[in-house]
Image 1 (spheres, rainbow, N blue to C red):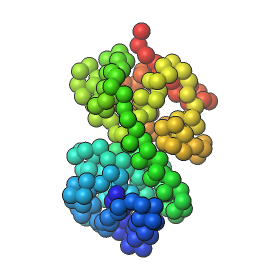
Image 2 (image 1 turned 180 degrees about the horizontal axis):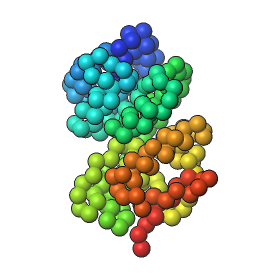
Image 3 (image 1 turned 120 degrees about the horizontal axis):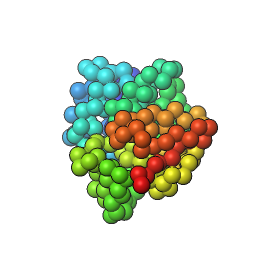
Image 4 (image 1 turned 90 degrees about the vertical axis):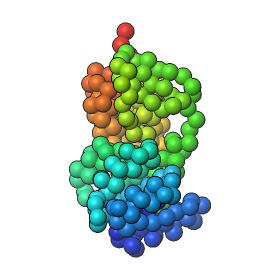
Length: 218
């Protein structure tokens, strides 16, 4: 995996901890190097800081996701949700606010890799004009392919596995993200907002006080 942070103490500390967990880790300290390293290395996951020299982490995320879907854990030093919302919008799968616990970072990395390694069934889901090819991980709207991030795809499939059933945000966090707790509910909301923008606003219904339900067109 690739760790990208211009603060060398942070990036090297993350790399040491991840290597201790058995991962092959490389480090980059700026935006252009991060993109080239990701392509050359074929990273399976990127831990990516937002503030970088060259160009920022958001642009790094855009460029690597345009090449191939890669799980991205975004790091942000800001306490508000601006970076989180923008980061999720350009293809990040999860985020951590600095300062963070190394145990939490390792747990988030492990959860992202577990999701990436799940075998997909060779079924085709048809949700009105939206079709989901599970084996190829492709989504089309009225026959036109739509790019979803890895997490957006997993969230859509999980909602589609229980059509019209209200699924709590906490359940989605546990079963899609691999971690629980109401503290991450805004992450779910941001991903649902992205799905509605890409697939149509009527596909996912908000169940107030609970979570979300996928409305299969009759």
